[in-house]
Image (cartoon, rainbow over all chains, first blue to last red; front, top):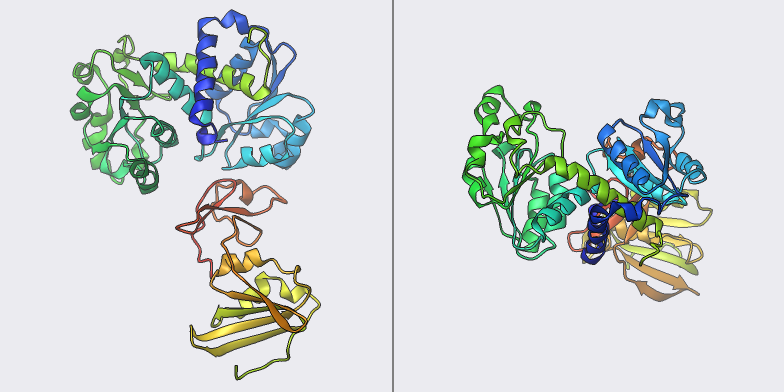
Length: 304
Length: 146
């Protein structure tokens, strides 16, 4: 339901499994031969849905489901609680995307099969956070002693909030929060997550001032409609666009992450830089979803 | 006490209710749906509060959901009466979870569309007395002692 449902130890196990899948995917090609995943997508999210479906297929499993509410029984007014009880008869595990916050929780309460929250409105998107964590750990080898820059819309970006909550559990993580004043992280994250954990952080307005000290740069989109006036938007939008010039100030081994889709906040000229990790991130998203399916289905791996 | 409205043989006396709040508690406890004697005393003199309300309910003692009283105001004193004696002064603790007393006001919450769903709030921060919707985790911002 939420990225914090796993303890640090459980998370480590999950990420270890995902890393092993990355190393030898062929070992896992048939471990879910007789299993089915239902993808219940009440709003379209092609990327997330395909990632789940690819993950299940890589494990040898089958996939069924719907990709928008109007092609499902929800259009006829069926409740989430009823739908999941029926789907429990058809599949072994399900991934649910829903525009309403808490819908996957309702499903989990009535389900006989494991329910994965594939994003519920502006609330949680735990498999994105797992993807981000696996990407960071795979490329850096560890979470501790990292300086992590989060750039862009930190106020409404739920992926940013979840990532902060997940990372403060590791020792010696530092955050640099780069955003316009209007889009700073909400006070509840500042007070009940950052300050409570004693995690050092600073807030900056300009990406180029922050970039030299970063080990990880997590970019998000700054949307025009988030600004109060056009003037501010024009003044600040370039602060949050990563291009070759800004990247030249960064460490050689910094990694750039982005939950995608990007619009213009990362210039296309950056894509071929070895530090651009956002497409690798999509690949890690499949591995971590494979690991999650295996863990929730409690699949016995023959070599373990 | 100057005022005496018939002694109870078995039931509850809810004392130290903030003056004027007795009727809301009467409804929240669904006392209007019970077929038992209820005495409501309003604006009684109190050393502790200046003025206070009191509710006396004559009913079997496991019939009331004290979690609701605790949620509304945990400073209310609950006296349990048996055989016309006070047998217990029950301390009220904030309930860990409260069902169908308050509603989630977040328009994006699943509770706004799904039918037949219980409105459940969970105590997430006992120190600051913060309740959050079980589903969308939105904080309850209303006054508990409404």
